[in-house]
Image (cartoon, rainbow, N blue to C red; front, side, top):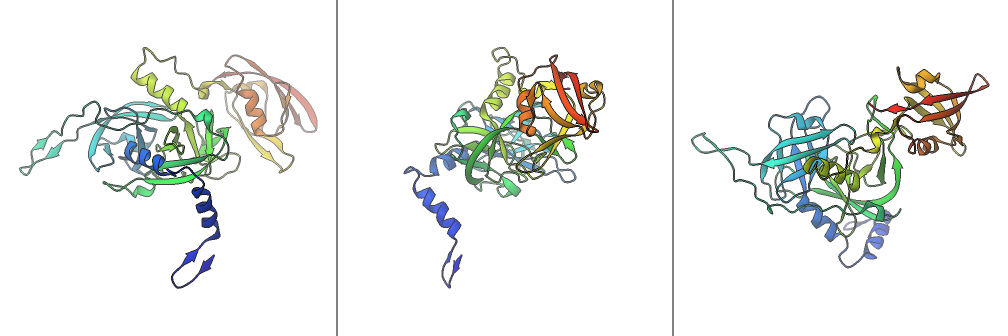
Length: 349
């Protein structure tokens, strides 16, 4: 960094600016404009360390908002603030444990006149709000620019603009994470990003590409079981859209069954090593298929389903092809002895 009386220059910033200059003429503007008008701020119940604020995404012109499951939604007087600072109430239409998504519908918020009488706000009309139509997350390639929009740290409380963060898309990966000491129930592919979104208030915000096309929803705050660090990710827009359609149009939507309710074994894994990794059993849930098959803590996993296990990802890759009711052959080393076990997979509860 070079400093002077009137200037401060960061070489890293210079690299970012140079990269930004190579973008299309519109730069980040189309994406930021799309986020600003379609991402809303949520305010609700606060308890303990749980933040009483968050973000949401408008998905219809008459005020339907998708966000993540959180404690703030349990508030008796849930408030939603739109781009122009207008405050609305909201009814929770659905909360889904498997996808950790929730759907809200905005409603007029009662106001009070000078005499203290309750006055109902104006009715919400069709076409009143700008909203996101789903894009296509499969078009993302590692290294593509992405922009996240939300309300981290409750910066925007009225008509202040939401916060936007620029980064790149890294990869698609199976989510294996926890919240505090509990495993996070969502099991499926997510969009891994280097944009810092693991902050209070950001979950429920939108992830878009440079054209402002919606590609994902910022997920809940979790810690990766692989790296033991906060994990920045977004739920693919396809998963979000399936959830929204299943609530708004249950008669037309396909049966909603996300990857999170696929085959369940009950094994929690951990790995050791850097270039060459070893995968061990960290714990086995009580009354789980793995416990019934005889899997034990500290077993070294050699192969699963006839495939050698080189890391946790390779184990999960085999599991993604399994369904409840399938059997899974597991080969482990325990006390210098090789043991083969067959697990009858169940459906996650």
